[in-house]
Image (cartoon, rainbow, N blue to C red; front, side):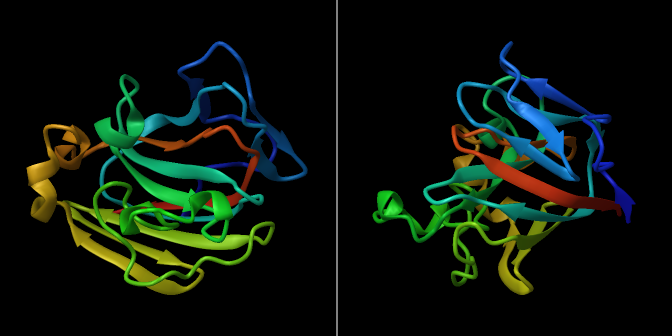
Length: 186
């Protein structure tokens, strides 16, 4: 594994989709203040990989990890998104199963909920190899999906057919913290 985030600055990352800058680094933590800023993209593309990261979501927080995303359109659909969410927020009480933390957003629901309380550091492990994607949240395997099984969603979700693209972190309007981002290309 090699570091995708150096813990000091945004070297290797670029904000996409807004002129307003909302991403920064403080004491080894990569964060967004939320608001109307863009998403944070790696400066290089990845195909097959394993990604390890830690995140901290605040109460009512919402974010995600974009996978194989291009830099145009909505990266959650032009690529795909692994959801990060405060699952226990009352604001999200009526979600669809594929909207909970660790899901492949709008595609594959987690087998069970493994998220921790808001404000606590959590771990996520994403593995994407070919069309197969797995997600472990806090050490628990919760998603094991073959994107080929979801090609009926291609008209609204063309990213399911992509084999490479940028990794990204979503600014969905709330503060989000990330640290210890590591990648291993497969």
